[in-house]
Image 1 (cartoon, helix red, strand yellow):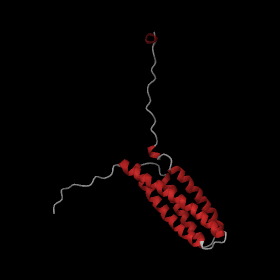
Image 2: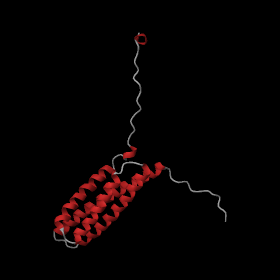
Image 3: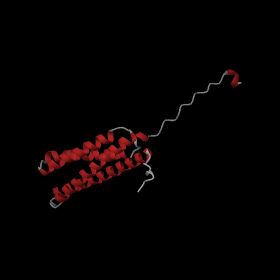
Image 4: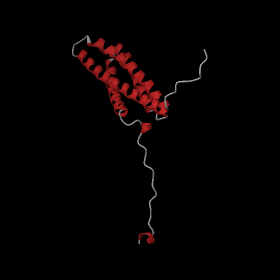
Amino acid sequence: MATTGHREPRPAPDAARSWSWLLFRATATVAALLVLGQAALAGGFLSGHYDALAAHSFTGVLLALTLFAQCVAAVWWWRSSRGPSWPVRESLIQFLITGALALLGEQRILTVHMPLAVGLAVGVALLLVRAWGAPPAQSAPTPPRTPIATATAEEAA
């Protein structure tokens, strides 16, 4: 069967850029919610609700998956917009910290696990604030400069 050579149009770069930034914002928001849940579950465990530890562990897996998706979204946005690399860098750091937290938590090294988790929570909150700001590559352009009109003595009279 012969094909007509008709292809589906690829999304415009602006469309890819906006979808990738929207996905980055969504993953940053979900990560922030999961980090809040992690803090609540850790508090529940420390208060004597020992079943919260299993939920804390499962939520950690969800957080790691979310941060991996955030890395993918950040790379997609960075590549489609040729913008700054800070979303990729910060997402990757948070993903790696989450892996370290999982290892420390499984080994019950809480003297490192807990302060590192607080640092991750601060980083996730700061990234969320930056993500919901204006996309860096799409910030408002500066208005064009207009020459200053100088009136001569003859024109002023």
